[in-house]
Image 1 (cartoon, rainbow, N blue to C red):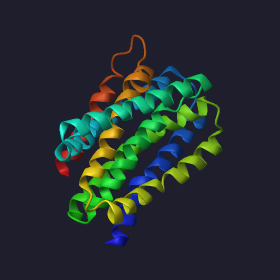
Image 2 (image 1 turned 135 degrees about the horizontal axis):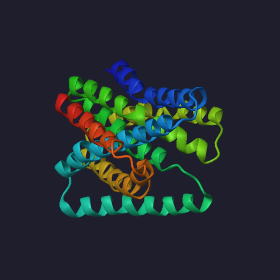
Image 3 (image 1 turned 90 degrees about the vertical axis):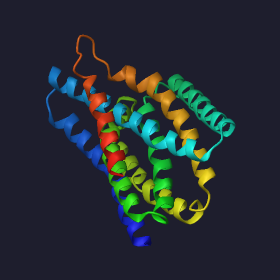
Image 4 (image 1 turned 180 degrees about the horizontal axis):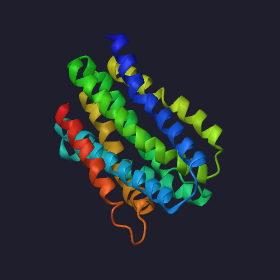
Amino acid sequence: MLQQIILFSGFAGITVFIGGLLANLFNHHIKETPVKYEITHTMMSFGAGIILSALALVLIPKAMDELNLFPMIISFSIGAFVFFLIDQYLAKKGGQTATLLAMMMDFVPEAIALGAVFAIEPNTAILLAIFIGLQNLPEAFNSFRDLVQSGFTPQKTLIIFFFLSFFGIGGALIGHFFLSDQPQLTALLMSFASGGILYLLIQDIIPESKLQKNYLISLGAAVGFLVGIIGEKIV
């Protein structure tokens, strides 16, 4: 069981690093053209759709299953307010880390839930790990671009992504050993993350993915959400 948790949560996390490698390759080995610009924004839109699907299909439904209305309201509101404060702080510093924050807000609670689910439904947990890994790929691709634009070197960004990729294993082990019999605590964490993710999506990520006089890019968000639907149906 423990080996399975490490293996599949490791897959879910390593796609963070792979997404960064692909973004680095794309940014430095493909010439600057309008098509490249459109591809970048389409990836942002696609990632936003996947994050939104995780919010709507996994985090909020799981939290609502376990929590009463008042704890749900409190945890969701605190999540939104905390990331409102973080976003304001980062804006004053001139950073562009909203996509990275949203990815980790999504990834860490899901990894913790993954570890908890392994104790009950291993087959479901395996499919969930695959789903998490697939959604981390475009999110990491977009996060790499944001961090480089905010002043990080590509090498430093890849090092950050390499270490972040191990968060999946850490989160899954925490979920397995400490939260398997604490569904309400896991639900509170998911609700808190949901509030933060929704704030970041509306404030930073969705506006950044839009290009004037280009309407096809928005279809990327629909495709990303569809990927989430497919993953949820399979799970």
